[in-house]
Image (cartoon, rainbow, N blue to C red; front, side):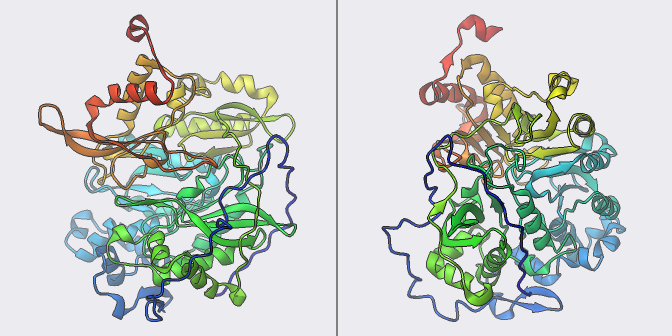
Length: 587
C-alpha cells in the first residue's frame, strides 16, 4: 500500500496555561534512563513479514502457519473481506440457516467472518440473530443516523435494542441475516458503516466527546478521528491492508486535559505536544486488556506533526500485521510484540515503514496538564460558543430502546444542532443548545423520567458490558444486576463524590473493570453452602485521567448475592461513604 499523507490546515492552539501549571504526562521516556535496545536474540528471520499480498488481500505465508489459532485458520480458509468487497453477503443472506449449518465454510461465515462486517452471531443466547457494531468516529451520531438505527431495531420488537459502548459507539441487536444487505445500504445512505469493526481489525477511533465545544480543549479531535476512520476503512469501501491483523487494535486521539479518551488502554494514543513551535502529537503504544494480561500504553519516543498523522498509524499497523504472533490468542495483542522486540526494536521496525525512513523523537513540550482535575460532563455546561451550552445525560448502563433513540434524535433536532455525542462511559451529550432553550429541554419527559442530567452519584460512573443476556462469552448477567446492586447500595450508604463502578461479564473486560474505582469481573464461584453460583472477582484502585493506573484484584470469587455488603464496606473504608441510619435505609 502506498504511503498516505493528508495535510490539515494549521491549527491555532488555545491558551492552555491559565488555571493550572503545565506538567508532563509521561508521553516521553524518562530522560534519566537510556532507551532500551533491541533484544540481542532477535535475528533477521524473526523480522521477516509473516504476511504477503495475494489478489488484493494480505494472507499468512505458508511457512508461518504452524501452531496458528482457529481464527487464523478461518481467515486462510476463506478471506473474510470478500463477504463485503466481493458482495458475498448478498448470496449468504439468501441461504436458510439450516442450510448454512450443513457446511463448515458457511457456518464459519456467520460465526467468524461476518465479524469483519461488524456482525456478531448470538448463537448461544439469540440463535439466528446478530449484534451489529457500527463505526462512529469520535462518538458523533447525527439525528438522522440515530433515527435510522432506531428504525432497524424497532422491527425486531423485544429482540431489538441498542447499546452505547465503551468505545463511544453504537451496537444494535436483534438483526437477522436476510435483512443485512438492506441494512448495509441504509447505513451508507446516512453516512454510517459497520465495516471492519470486529475481530482482527481497528476498532472505533475514540476522541474528546466535547470536541469543538469545550472552552478548555487543547485540540478538536473530530477531524483526526474522521480521517483515521476513513483511512482505515478506505472511506467505508474496505481496506484489506489492515484487515488481517493478529488481533484487535484500538486507537484514540487526545483533545483535552481530562483524558476522556483513556489513552493508557489503547494500542495507539496520540498525545498533544508542540515541537519547535509546531503542533503535533507524542505517541503512546501498547495499552490493552485481555483475560491473561492487562498493560498500560508506553511511550514510543516519537512525535508526529498534527497535519500529518496517518503515516505513523500506517507504519505501526503494518509492523503489527507483519510481525505479530498468531498462535495463542491470549498472546497476540500488540504489546506482546513490543515486549519481544523491546520498545526501541519495535520503534526501529516502525521507522522502516515510515516515509523517508524517519520518525522524530518525542517532544518535551506536552500540552496535557497532569494536575488537571477531571471534569464531570453531566448536566448543563457553557460551550466555547457564546450563548450555547451542552447537556450531559445519563444512560443507565448504556441500554436504549428504539423509542428512546427516536426521542433523543427529536431532542437533538429541536433543541440542539441535530447531533448527539456518545461517551466511553456509555452516556450521551446533547451539544449546541441555545441557552434560551435549556429550561424547556430539561423539562422534557425523557430527561425528567429516564435519562437524568444529574443522576445519583453512584450511578454517574456505572458502566456494564452486555453480559450473558446476549453475549455468549459472558459468564454472568451484568446490566440489570449492576443497576440493582447499585440501587441497593445507595439505600445503605451516602457518598459525597462519584465512585466509578464497572461490570464485565467475563475476563475479556469489555466493561473495562481495571480502570474503575471498583470493578466486577464475572466468574463462577461457590456460595457459603458450597453451591456453584454466579460471582465476581472484585478489582479496586483503577484511575483515569492524567494519573491513570490500572486497578488490582481485591477479592476473588465473591458470590453476586454477597456483593452489596462488600461494596458498602469498601465505600465506607476507602471512599468516605457514610452509612445511612436505619430509618433512611428502609424508606
